[in-house]
Length: 102
Image (cartoon, rainbow, N blue to C red):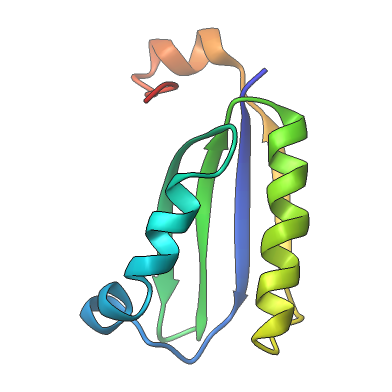
């Protein structure tokens, strides 16, 4: 079953166009993650948080990514991380125009 993952963590930037430049290589790396269908990058400079919303093909891929990304963020000194996953009700989501594939 597809799984939605929401990551949020403290960040003082970069944001916007600066983030596009700074994180382009990371975005390409994430694009190759096993089981990843898509990611939406999120940021809120006023709240000083960043993160992402991901759709994975299955729970196993989701959990593997949570472990990998949490360790990566810890390497940057970021430890106050929230990662929450949800099972996706595909039938109802498709009715409401969700894109559940690449």
